[in-house]
Length: 373
Image (cartoon, rainbow, N blue to C red; front, side):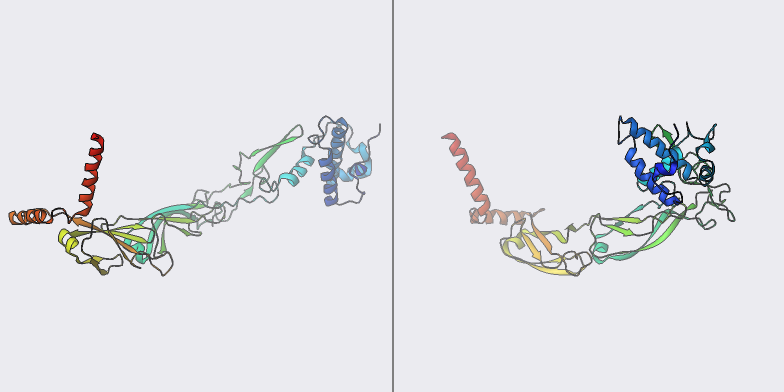
């Protein structure tokens, strides 16, 4: 039985250009693909015919021979039965999956973005309050200045990998499926370097410590992250550099504790000041001082709020508050006379000056009385 004309198989005119042939093949291959027509022998047969027709007509030399001699040009081992359709099928594979798998065989880029870097910096609470400019030394990799990042010795350049033809991956056909793996010759780069740069050993990058300036804004908190765009490791094969991330930690302070923009400070107060009232001078986080009035009868744990004496809001002008917590200090190292005076005071007060303790022990007495009833 005579074979059907290849142009008729694809449904195109004899003068059709390469783009028209490809569009027609793609449409028909998708229509008759065995995966879409499981168990349909007619569809499988048509798929093979379409693949065979496209494999011949896409090649200019095969097409010229076919136009002159027809199917006879591929008889006697020249093609026809048993022909390998992997080349034509790879074209539709490129169309369908090329974007998903990194561009397929067309125009693969060997450039790779550099890695991001992390730098840990510790600052004081005062520096977090005011902000500061800082200079840091960061070990990193930079583009080799001898080969300009190509990895090739000056006067030479990387060459297209002969194994994968620059794709970086090798495809093999197993039945109607394409299997793709990384090219072992170029390790997926698509290029090989026959004459590596002596300065960088063909890597295109060298290790170096960079001195960078960074501005720490006022109000930063523990764990704040500052990003320096393009200050990470240099990219491979001319790729863009990564970023540098500076992670800040704030040292514990001997006077202040911080919670966001709030600053807390425990203030010891003498028993007499707490009882009689008075005034104490306290430091503030900005390096100043503040006078705080202590009312008579102040108990331990009482808090006093100083408005706008806390930390500044990040990149803002407003400030949080400062919270003072009174801690009434019990006298120590008493002289004999001081102890006598305290005993006289206790006897004369009769417990009326300590309402909280008097109320507590009254409740304790009621508790035990209820148990004995």
